[in-house]
Every structure is written in C-alpha cells, then in structure tokens.
Amino acid sequence: MTTVSSSPTSFKLWLAAIKPPMYTVAIIPIWVGTAVAVAEQHLFNLRIFSTFLMAAILIIAWLNLSNDVFDSETGIDKNKAHSLVNLTGNKSLIFSLANLCLILGLAGIVAIAVWQQDVTVLTLIIGCCALGYSYQGPPFRLGYRGLGEPICFLTFGPMALAAAYYSQTQSWQGLLHHPIPFLVASSFIGISTSIILFCSHFHQVEDDQAAGKRSPIVRLGTQRGATLLNYATGLMFLALAMAISLGYLSPWVLLTFLSLPIAIQLCRHVQRHHNQPQQVSNCKFIAVNLHFLSGLLLGIGLTL
Image 1 (cartoon, helix red, strand yellow):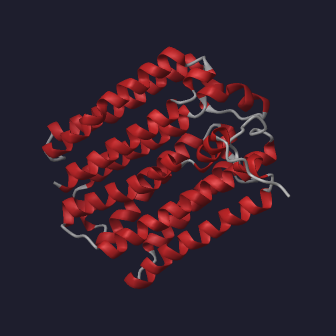
Image 2 (cartoon, one colour):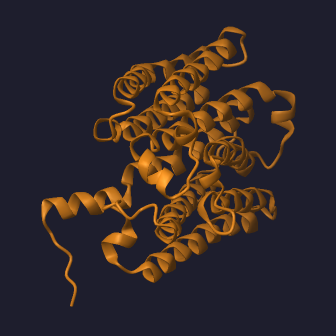
Image 3 (cartoon, helix red, strand yellow):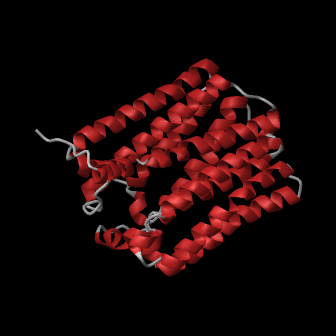
C-alpha cells in the first residue's frame, strides 16, 4: 500500500500542486465584472454573485487538474515534482476529479440560467471552458503554439467580466451606452491574468523546448520576455490612468495604484533574474499577488 509522506517537503509539494493562490484567478473577474454592474446599473444580487464565485472556483480547479493530466501526456512535466499526476501516480483519478469539478461548476452556472430564464451567462461560460480546454487539451494544445496568453486574456478578461456583468444586469444596454469603463476594466484584468501565465514560463525554458512547446519565452528569449513584461505591466496602469483623467472612470479607481509597488517589484525581479531558473521561478506568485490586489482595489474603486 502506498502512503503519502507527511514530511514538510511533501506538504510543500502538495501545496504547490493544489495551487491555492491561483484560485484568485477565478474570483477577481467575477468581482470586477460585478463591480462594473454595480457602478453603472446600481444592481447587485448576492445569490447570483456567490453562486457564480463558487462555480468559477470549481471551473478553475477543473482547468488546473486537467492541465496536469494533459501535460503528463506530453512529458513536459517529467521534472515537475509538484505535478498532481506525479505526486499521486494516478492520472485517471486526477482526470476524474477534474471532470467532477467541471460538472459541479457548470451546474452552478446552469442554476443561474434557470433562475434568470436566460442562457446568456451559460453560453459565455461554456465558451470560456472551450477556450480553456483548447489551451492544453488534445488535439488543440494551443498553449504549445504560444497562444496561451491571448486565450488567457480573452477568457479571464472580456468574456468572464461580460458574464459577471450580465449575470447582475441581464442586459447589455449599460455597456452599449458606456463601453469604456468595461473595456478598460476587462483589459486590465485580462492583461494581469495573462502576466501570471507569461511569468510561469521563465523558469522552464529547457523543459518547454524539450517538449516542443513554443511558449512566448521560448520564442522571445528571457531577456526580451522581461522587457515585454515591463511594457505589458506599464500599459495596464497607463490605460487606467488615462481613463480616469478623461473622466471615464471615477477618481476612486486610483485606489488600484496602491498595487503599483508589487508591479514594480515583479518587473525588477524578472529583469534581474530572467535567465536564472531557480531565482525567477517565484515570479508567477508575485504576479498572482499583483493580479489579486490590483483587481480587488479596482473593484472597490468601481463600486465606490
């Protein structure tokens, strides 16, 4: 009988495999999309919001678990000690858990559709799931072609925020009359989410190349990748500042700039260690912190 070690090292591996911080990626788009609805339409339904949040967390669990399974099939994770497939040695179990999470998550979205007698949110989320599958799932594996970041931007930016917005308003009229706040907010969240994925490539260039994965960092090299990170991060905050200065967003949205020190820390860290896998491997967690704090503050600013 196989036993799981309870040593501190084993605990850390399991924690890294489960990726608790990554579940903020599910929470923030729903939070900000709802905040846009509150800001523009003064509408808020707690039951819809809480159901959507739980469903989104389950769908992200499906994405993380299934990606571990798909990566195990290509051999790209052979040196990844914190892969759930490697830790358990049971790919079928992980895949079954992944599919259970997907079914439960979609059940929550179906409940919203039934309550509202409207399939718009369900359609958007199924589209998000399809794009999420295309990232690593066969036969597409678009992430191996370097398309992960655009998929991430679209899925966790405009599509997820649109679904969250519509779940509260059941109307697109507010967006049609005042599209700029939504476009700026969804682009900000889309870019900040894509940055997490982008940063995850810096420390695994050799493994990606060996598996034939043409990630952006494999294509660009780590130095140019670090430079691109600077531009992408700067663009997020520049677009926000312009929207505030032109009166499209409330001055309260300036609260988001309290997360700027984390953005600076991330860019400096990657610039300094971009070609040192051991030192740069934690940059994705700095990116997660940036995504969570900036998104939390953006939602607060929009609501106020």
